[in-house]
Length: 278
View 1: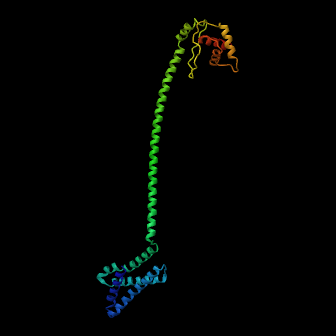
View 2: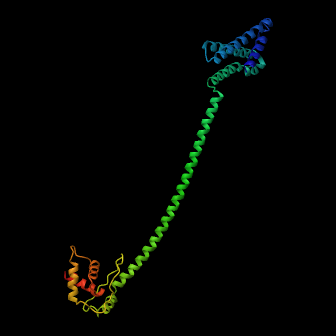
View 3: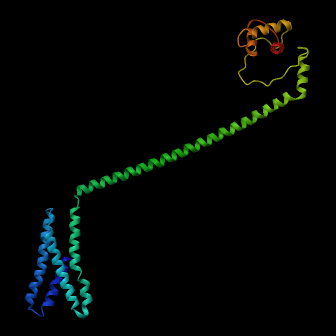
């Protein structure tokens, strides 16, 4: 663009001044303008190569560029029918000078190939780390989603099993309670236990959920070894042998460990009488 601007400036000066002065003089004027512009441009480039800058040289270069543009504009205004065509190229000197300015700024920020390779390596490493981090996050998210789904499914299965178990236990307990509260239950138990414990109406209690202790002696003995009064006195003695009083289960355990024998029904009846009397 600088070369084209110089050629146009020289041609315009020769055509413009050639009618009023000899053409060699016009040629010298044109070459002077172009030579001065080229000289200042070359000196400015030399300073830029040394890492230096001179504002005076830059100002002189801009002055030569403005003079060349002014010559083109003046010729365009006096060209008559071809004025538009000359005005279209009158901006070339200013544009060429601006491009040289941009090129100088680029040279100030230019980097060596080694530095560019290092920058590219750093950028590639950063992209690789970002990609690995994204992949790790996606994998962790998928794993966590799978784990939550498995835990939720297992929890739902456990809840369903617990609900079915609770429903079954509730039904069984309701059946036992209904049987306990029934009118025929007391009469049936009385008719069964009356031959063993006369004048005693047993109260059927719901079973206690817990460990079952083996009974050493048989549930029904061959013959009563103790009378009711003796059995009551023995039960009361064992029951009150410790403070607080022993429970029925502990009392029965110590009763049989001491070598005494009594049917479970008679022992329970004696316990009820002792506790009722107390």
